[in-house]
Image 1 (cartoon, rainbow, N blue to C red):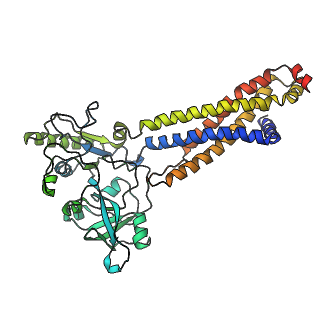
Image 2: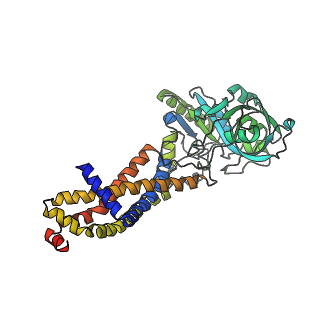
Image 3: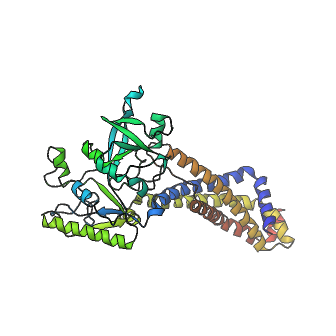
Length: 441
């Protein structure tokens, strides 16, 4: 029976191609707009690194001004989002964490090794100064080589892991492990090359915007400190500031570093949290940390929820897009009503020959659902084209519409839109008296 109804629906669409196309486009427009904003919101809300959700933690301590809380935390009571240099380094020295990395961003001049006689002028790239643990902690995929070791961190060795694009630009995409490049005024050895890597969000970056592409080069944290490479991200400070020297800045209460730790189980989390509390109490005895004890070792999913990584504007836009789909459905109702009533003589003949109201209603609902599915297909194509255009904009995001959960939403929206648009027209054509149809025949 379903196949028979589908055959009738296809014949109906072929009989009025222009009107049918207009109806399908109306549904497609609403689906395309809705699914675009739903996909964007869903990608912001998704687990950024599912394999590490339970073990990757962000560390915060409250070393802020005793007179007032950290800006923006008056309602939440959260500690500062960043950490001072002395606190970040001190809190790396604990065996409960299997991996640990303080980090900060920088903008540095890079060029190929001058001995290679490259004619390319130095150019600036985004850099991350971190521990070698960063790559395994963040599941960064390496095409060649590896990250550096903890010993290299401590020895302040001039090494680097470079991104796929930078490797293409400087070395033509080949295995460049062992090659040299000049970073600022330092000759650096490449120890690893990332595979193409463009996660939707820089989930390791909480202090600054996570909405950006991964950095192009990664080097030891200790090297950045030794060379006094400036932090290019946010820097929160209070009191007298860092003075006029880099050493004074490192010893100041300026909060500019993020600290991630990997804690494999509940026992490790408890041990590390105790270590952080003990450190804070020790600092209190030294005259620092004058605010109430407020340390947090937060799993990444909880951290994203706390900082509302999903902007409220996206929730609003998703709702508005669904309302727009509803408006499209209302406009399609009138078109379907005209299309169905134009077939009144045909329907009257079927009713006179014994067809029930239910079968007439079902026939037209099937046609509406077919229209909804066709509109959904075109809507997905329109949404994919829009997201492709957004992906090409220079903000570093990469939206992926073709995810299984999003496609289920498309299916539900398409069937729902088709049903709601056709409900009244199908009921109307099914409930008219056959005598009216026969008079028109």
